[in-house]
Image (cartoon, helix red, strand yellow):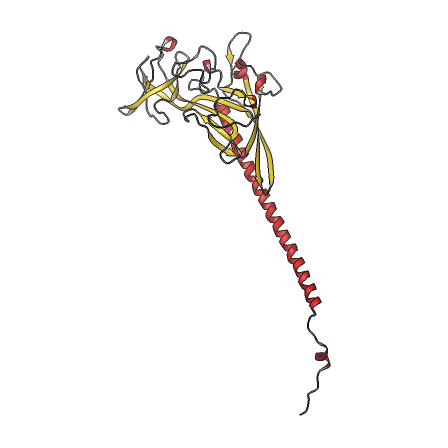
Length: 324
């Protein structure tokens, strides 16, 4: 049997050795590891960017909510300034309530440095050292009055939208320049209109006052408290909420508010303002700290906003009159 000659090229060919194979696998793993490292780093960057975006979005929304509330503080259907003697509270809308706006509606904006003295937190534990603020206005659901029968008769309006029995309302008389904070009684249809009864008849200075416009008192208390998730949140207390605040924004860990009085050039904390000086506050600076924890890391961001306040009236020391 004749053997075929073997090609020299084929006789010199051989497979990879074990060492060469291991080196090749190691190089491949290094390349794959590098690609995976880049992928993980990009994923982590995207996660952090998303967390930061959500934090800033929550903070901006929370600050805007507080600023809207503060801008409305002191407003009422007649634009009556918060001057003692012009706005009367009936016995069923006492000035001692946190939501009343105070005697003469002079406490429609009240700050609480470190939360001291704040009483609208209900069953929520406040975060120590975080500021709080209460705002009150009488402009919600404002309606023109068709007819009125003081002191105890019904007030007739075209619609009852936004009004319910036991609401705290603000009635004003353009003719007499007076306002009354009172509690609504029953509400019922009156032909094509609606009648809103007084819980108790008006007495004293406003007994004969005929209402020309009617609004609902809107009171809100803003503070930072402990939530049910084991963290902290921004809360809003509100009139008619059964005494229990609602959670507005999770992750808010601190709130600082400073105020600017008319004629001053420096913002001050709430404890530097006398009770009688709150109607003279013309601006506020709100600063919220928002925190988010994940992967054993806590991200903190602070968002601030300066708010120019409406409905601010400053007492003129020379003539005792108020002016916007």
